[in-house]
Length: 217
Image (cartoon, rainbow, N blue to C red; front, side, top):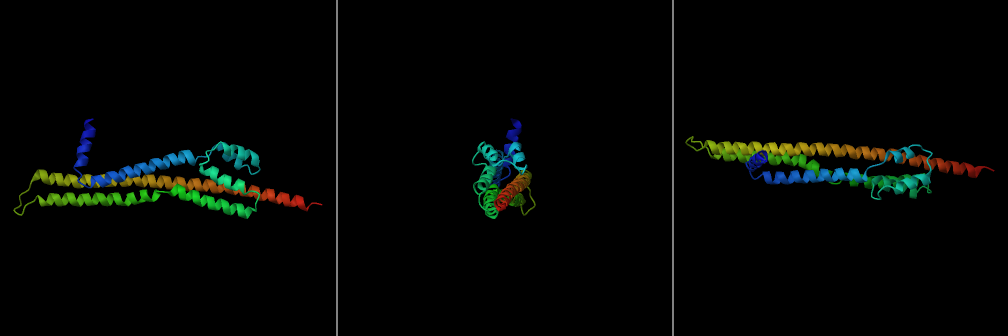
Protein backbone atom coordinates (compact mmCIF):
# COMPACT_ATOMS: atom_id res chain seq x y z
CA UNK A 1 0.00 0.00 0.00
CA UNK A 2 2.85 2.37 0.81
CA UNK A 3 4.42 1.62 -2.56
CA UNK A 4 1.20 2.65 -4.34
CA UNK A 5 1.01 5.83 -2.28
CA UNK A 6 4.63 6.68 -3.06
CA UNK A 7 4.04 5.98 -6.77
CA UNK A 8 1.04 8.29 -6.75
CA UNK A 9 3.07 11.06 -5.11
CA UNK A 10 5.82 10.56 -7.68
CA UNK A 11 3.32 10.86 -10.53
CA UNK A 12 1.92 14.06 -9.04
CA UNK A 13 5.43 15.48 -9.11
CA UNK A 14 5.49 14.89 -12.85
CA UNK A 15 3.50 18.06 -13.42
CA UNK A 16 0.63 18.88 -15.73
CA UNK A 17 1.88 16.59 -18.53
CA UNK A 18 1.07 13.53 -16.42
CA UNK A 19 -2.64 13.98 -17.23
CA UNK A 20 -2.38 13.65 -21.04
CA UNK A 21 0.22 10.92 -20.60
CA UNK A 22 -2.20 9.03 -18.36
CA UNK A 23 -4.92 9.38 -20.98
CA UNK A 24 -2.57 7.98 -23.63
CA UNK A 25 -1.71 5.06 -21.35
CA UNK A 26 -5.39 4.22 -20.78
CA UNK A 27 -6.09 4.50 -24.51
CA UNK A 28 -3.17 2.23 -25.42
CA UNK A 29 -4.19 -0.41 -22.88
CA UNK A 30 -7.83 -0.29 -24.05
CA UNK A 31 -6.82 -0.81 -27.68
CA UNK A 32 -4.48 -3.70 -26.84
CA UNK A 33 -7.17 -5.36 -24.72
CA UNK A 34 -9.71 -4.94 -27.53
CA UNK A 35 -7.28 -6.50 -30.02
CA UNK A 36 -6.55 -9.42 -27.71
CA UNK A 37 -10.28 -10.18 -27.34
CA UNK A 38 -10.83 -9.77 -31.09
CA UNK A 39 -8.16 -12.30 -32.03
CA UNK A 40 -9.23 -14.70 -29.30
CA UNK A 41 -12.92 -14.66 -30.27
CA UNK A 42 -13.08 -13.82 -33.96
CA UNK A 43 -9.75 -14.75 -35.57
CA UNK A 44 -9.35 -18.25 -34.16
CA UNK A 45 -9.46 -21.32 -36.39
CA UNK A 46 -9.64 -24.83 -34.99
CA UNK A 47 -6.94 -27.30 -35.99
CA UNK A 48 -9.62 -29.74 -37.16
CA UNK A 49 -11.09 -27.28 -39.64
CA UNK A 50 -7.65 -26.22 -40.81
CA UNK A 51 -6.59 -29.81 -41.43
CA UNK A 52 -9.79 -30.48 -43.35
CA UNK A 53 -9.19 -27.62 -45.80
CA UNK A 54 -5.57 -28.63 -46.27
CA UNK A 55 -6.53 -32.12 -47.53
CA UNK A 56 -7.51 -30.60 -50.94
CA UNK A 57 -10.03 -33.35 -51.64
CA UNK A 58 -12.32 -32.52 -48.72
CA UNK A 59 -16.08 -32.82 -48.94
CA UNK A 60 -17.85 -29.47 -49.31
CA UNK A 61 -20.80 -30.59 -47.22
CA UNK A 62 -18.47 -31.61 -44.39
CA UNK A 63 -16.83 -28.19 -44.52
CA UNK A 64 -20.20 -26.49 -44.31
CA UNK A 65 -21.11 -28.55 -41.25
CA UNK A 66 -17.89 -27.62 -39.48
CA UNK A 67 -18.34 -23.95 -40.31
CA UNK A 68 -21.69 -23.96 -38.51
CA UNK A 69 -19.79 -24.45 -35.25
CA UNK A 70 -17.98 -21.14 -35.78
CA UNK A 71 -19.33 -17.77 -34.69
CA UNK A 72 -20.81 -16.01 -37.72
CA UNK A 73 -18.64 -13.01 -36.85
CA UNK A 74 -15.51 -15.12 -37.03
CA UNK A 75 -13.24 -13.82 -39.78
CA UNK A 76 -12.47 -17.29 -41.14
CA UNK A 77 -16.19 -18.08 -41.19
CA UNK A 78 -16.85 -14.95 -43.25
CA UNK A 79 -13.99 -15.70 -45.63
CA UNK A 80 -14.86 -19.37 -46.14
CA UNK A 81 -18.56 -18.56 -46.52
CA UNK A 82 -17.85 -16.23 -49.43
CA UNK A 83 -15.97 -19.00 -51.23
CA UNK A 84 -18.64 -21.58 -50.46
CA UNK A 85 -21.47 -19.37 -51.68
CA UNK A 86 -19.65 -18.70 -54.97
CA UNK A 87 -18.11 -22.10 -55.63
CA UNK A 88 -20.53 -22.87 -58.48
CA UNK A 89 -19.34 -19.81 -60.36
CA UNK A 90 -16.12 -19.62 -62.41
CA UNK A 91 -12.99 -19.90 -60.29
CA UNK A 92 -11.77 -16.44 -61.26
CA UNK A 93 -15.04 -14.94 -59.99
CA UNK A 94 -14.83 -16.81 -56.67
CA UNK A 95 -11.20 -15.81 -56.24
CA UNK A 96 -12.07 -12.17 -56.83
CA UNK A 97 -14.89 -12.20 -54.27
CA UNK A 98 -12.61 -13.93 -51.75
CA UNK A 99 -9.92 -11.28 -52.30
CA UNK A 100 -12.47 -8.53 -51.70
CA UNK A 101 -13.61 -10.13 -48.46
CA UNK A 102 -10.00 -10.63 -47.34
CA UNK A 103 -9.35 -6.93 -47.87
CA UNK A 104 -12.37 -6.02 -45.74
CA UNK A 105 -11.16 -8.40 -43.03
CA UNK A 106 -7.65 -6.95 -43.11
CA UNK A 107 -9.10 -3.47 -42.69
CA UNK A 108 -11.03 -4.66 -39.65
CA UNK A 109 -7.98 -6.28 -38.10
CA UNK A 110 -5.88 -3.15 -38.56
CA UNK A 111 -8.52 -0.81 -37.14
CA UNK A 112 -7.10 1.52 -34.47
CA UNK A 113 -3.58 0.17 -34.80
CA UNK A 114 -2.64 3.60 -36.13
CA UNK A 115 -3.57 5.01 -32.70
CA UNK A 116 -0.95 2.78 -31.04
CA UNK A 117 1.58 3.89 -33.62
CA UNK A 118 0.74 7.53 -32.88
CA UNK A 119 1.10 6.98 -29.13
CA UNK A 120 4.57 5.52 -29.69
CA UNK A 121 5.60 8.90 -31.10
CA UNK A 122 3.41 11.22 -29.04
CA UNK A 123 4.15 9.88 -25.53
CA UNK A 124 7.90 10.65 -25.54
CA UNK A 125 7.21 14.11 -26.99
CA UNK A 126 4.73 14.88 -24.22
CA UNK A 127 7.25 13.57 -21.72
CA UNK A 128 9.84 15.88 -23.23
CA UNK A 129 7.48 18.83 -22.87
CA UNK A 130 7.09 17.91 -19.21
CA UNK A 131 10.87 17.75 -18.94
CA UNK A 132 11.24 21.23 -20.42
CA UNK A 133 8.56 22.62 -18.10
CA UNK A 134 10.20 21.07 -15.04
CA UNK A 135 13.63 22.39 -15.94
CA UNK A 136 12.26 25.87 -16.62
CA UNK A 137 10.60 25.80 -13.22
CA UNK A 138 13.89 24.77 -11.61
CA UNK A 139 15.85 27.54 -13.36
CA UNK A 140 13.31 30.19 -12.36
CA UNK A 141 14.11 29.46 -8.74
CA UNK A 142 17.72 30.46 -9.27
CA UNK A 143 17.75 34.20 -8.61
CA UNK A 144 19.88 36.78 -10.33
CA UNK A 145 21.98 37.04 -7.16
CA UNK A 146 22.76 33.37 -7.37
CA UNK A 147 20.44 32.41 -4.51
CA UNK A 148 18.95 28.98 -4.90
CA UNK A 149 15.92 27.30 -3.35
CA UNK A 150 17.30 23.73 -3.12
CA UNK A 151 13.92 22.13 -2.45
CA UNK A 152 12.25 23.92 -5.34
CA UNK A 153 15.05 23.14 -7.75
CA UNK A 154 14.99 19.47 -6.75
CA UNK A 155 11.24 19.37 -7.31
CA UNK A 156 11.63 20.85 -10.77
CA UNK A 157 14.27 18.31 -11.72
CA UNK A 158 12.09 15.50 -10.34
CA UNK A 159 9.17 16.75 -12.45
CA UNK A 160 11.40 16.69 -15.51
CA UNK A 161 12.67 13.16 -14.91
CA UNK A 162 9.27 11.67 -14.01
CA UNK A 163 7.57 13.10 -17.10
CA UNK A 164 10.32 11.74 -19.33
CA UNK A 165 10.26 8.31 -17.70
CA UNK A 166 6.47 7.99 -17.92
CA UNK A 167 6.45 9.06 -21.57
CA UNK A 168 9.13 6.56 -22.51
CA UNK A 169 7.41 3.75 -20.59
CA UNK A 170 4.09 4.37 -22.36
CA UNK A 171 5.86 4.51 -25.72
CA UNK A 172 7.66 1.22 -25.10
CA UNK A 173 4.50 -0.62 -24.08
CA UNK A 174 2.63 0.78 -27.08
CA UNK A 175 5.49 -0.16 -29.41
CA UNK A 176 5.50 -3.77 -28.21
CA UNK A 177 1.70 -3.91 -28.56
CA UNK A 178 1.76 -2.40 -32.04
CA UNK A 179 4.47 -4.78 -33.27
CA UNK A 180 2.79 -7.83 -31.72
CA UNK A 181 -0.66 -7.18 -33.17
CA UNK A 182 0.77 -6.13 -36.54
CA UNK A 183 2.60 -9.45 -36.74
CA UNK A 184 -0.52 -11.33 -35.59
CA UNK A 185 -2.51 -9.60 -38.30
CA UNK A 186 0.06 -10.58 -40.95
CA UNK A 187 0.04 -14.21 -39.74
CA UNK A 188 -3.77 -14.33 -39.79
CA UNK A 189 -3.95 -12.94 -43.32
CA UNK A 190 -1.22 -15.30 -44.54
CA UNK A 191 -3.11 -18.26 -43.09
CA UNK A 192 -6.35 -17.06 -44.65
CA UNK A 193 -4.71 -16.62 -48.04
CA UNK A 194 -3.10 -20.06 -47.86
CA UNK A 195 -6.34 -21.82 -46.98
CA UNK A 196 -8.27 -19.78 -49.52
CA UNK A 197 -5.84 -20.97 -52.21
CA UNK A 198 -6.53 -24.57 -51.18
CA UNK A 199 -10.27 -24.02 -51.58
CA UNK A 200 -9.94 -22.26 -54.94
CA UNK A 201 -7.72 -25.11 -56.17
CA UNK A 202 -10.41 -27.55 -55.07
CA UNK A 203 -13.01 -25.58 -57.05
CA UNK A 204 -10.80 -25.57 -60.15
CA UNK A 205 -10.27 -29.32 -59.81
CA UNK A 206 -14.02 -29.94 -59.48
CA UNK A 207 -14.75 -27.80 -62.52
CA UNK A 208 -12.02 -29.53 -64.52
CA UNK A 209 -13.43 -32.95 -63.67
CA UNK A 210 -16.96 -31.82 -64.56
CA UNK A 211 -15.70 -30.47 -67.88
CA UNK A 212 -13.82 -33.68 -68.64
CA UNK A 213 -16.91 -35.74 -67.80
CA UNK A 214 -19.03 -33.61 -70.11
CA UNK A 215 -16.64 -34.17 -73.04
CA UNK A 216 -16.80 -37.95 -72.79
CA UNK A 217 -19.00 -39.64 -75.43
